[in-house]
Amino acid sequence: MFRFNHFNFNVLDLERSLAFYDQALGLKPVREKTAADGSFKLVYLGDGESDFTLELTWLRDREAPYDLGEDEFHLAFTVADMAAAHARHEALGCICFENPAMGIYFIEDPDGYWLEIIPQK
Image (cartoon, rainbow, N blue to C red; front, side, top):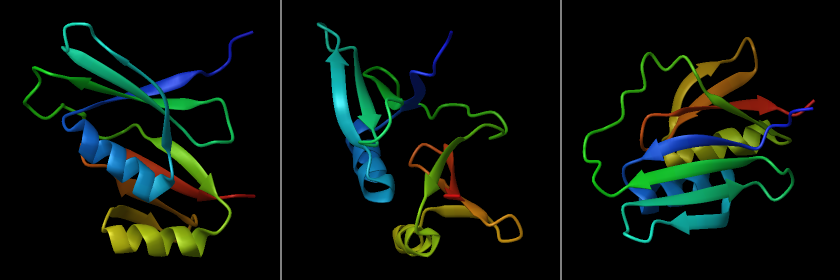
């Protein structure tokens, strides 16, 4: 049987991304790995409840933004208090799309990745 373990986003500015994921979603580093030569760093973020992690990969020599295609992929999060989450994300200025009819919205991280916010059922 296969189980989800982690998902990866490559980021240009690791510190900026770590601050965003902490402020926007409360995700905290749970482990990290740095290459001996300093060429890359991996930081795994957790939500404190599930085993699933988001791996942020920083590559020292990468300067150009990543090509995210047509943004047809995303990572989704559930939240118990949708109104409080929306207010938090509105204050951070990171809401990029809303679908009131479906009761969901999306936020965008500093590298352009979309994150779906879904009410907990």
